[in-house]
Length: 83
Image 1 (cartoon, rainbow, N blue to C red):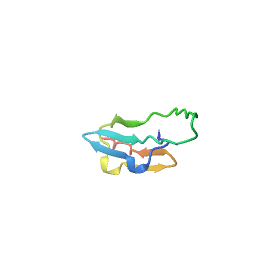
Image 2: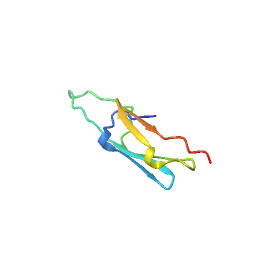
Image 3: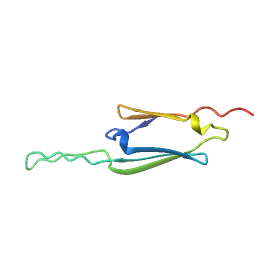
Image 4: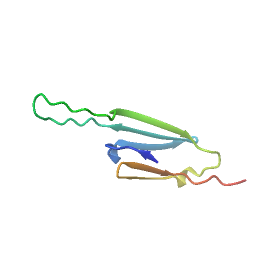
């Protein structure tokens, strides 16, 4: 599970290549204009992000699935087949 508040599903990309699962995305900065003299403090960071995970040997990469709902990305990786 990855918490991605403020990130739109179309701003997230998943790829699997040579046993490496990579999640890339971008959180767009949202500016709110208010009254003069007021400040808005934002605790979230904005910009690009990348996370990569090595998959165990034997994982069927075609069976990996992902779901993005309510700011949470859930990636399901099947257990590798036992020899």
